[in-house]
Length: 444
Image (cartoon, rainbow, N blue to C red; front, side):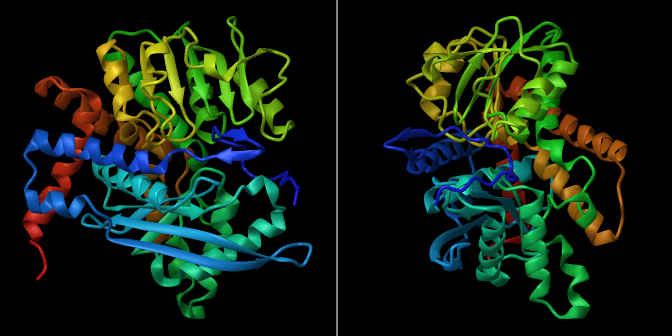
């Protein structure tokens, strides 16, 4: 097939191509990366050995293979994944992505990051992640609907509104979540369908979704940058920033930074990189990409540059908002930014981070920086459970309050313990989970 889904979410990831085939991010290294980050923080807080054992592994790993009939009548077999890392604090929570690099190792790493993220944010959730191994641009909208519904059916009771609550992630969106919710509710008795609406979050507003959910993650990236700037007496007006991944997260982060007076000078997406030292207008580029199959390439307001030169762009702020393992020991030495704000999950590996910190470059870690999405998901979950409708102003106000609380905790821990922001964030997140295990005990 060579069909383009014109209505799918804009591409958020960076994939290299060799012989026209996507080259996968090294998922095994992502698992090693998150475990090394975890163990470093566990050492820092002297985590009890028994709890370290529990948190070092996942609770459940679900792999489903399912057939779907394509538009041409042929049947394709797809592989879907859902990894549930930990639920000591509440139901599993995490996104579902549609991408060629989705596999069990990638899901493991991402599920663990979700556990730390929900804990740090003070939410009553655990961590999970998953998705389907596919390139959604190769399928029509009707095929993606059938794939999504069949995947939801295959997962069955491995998800549920009080057990495991999926949300959008790379290449999935509110429409994907609407299909999932409808399919899941359809498997329940008529009298129970309404109470199962919050099986997923990130739904369209007309189908129980939350006002402002679309911009929550990107707003969180912007908000944490602004909080960092305030703490460091750093004026954002006239500062320059570059964005890797111009999908939902990258776009909204850039949108709010531009309103603050900062200037976007370079963007990289799955198709290539563009640059303009005088600035690239965010909304103009966004509208262009919508009309260009999600690509920023050939935008008239910027010149194309080599991908390998993107991270070397001289700027004040770098926002990696694509996939994991993008900043490594190979390119960390070339980065010319004062601050890195991790809009993606796991964009910086351990070796790359060591180089950045040695060079005096600050990093707002992913589990803090991009937590706006899961916080908003929690608000939607509450809205559905309580039969309420929240307005945009209320959502943004509540989101800011949560983000401010998390940032203050991380910043103060970092200062008081003379450690970097990531270690501080991990220590706070893990200590909260440890407290839950200490209070409850280990069954039996």
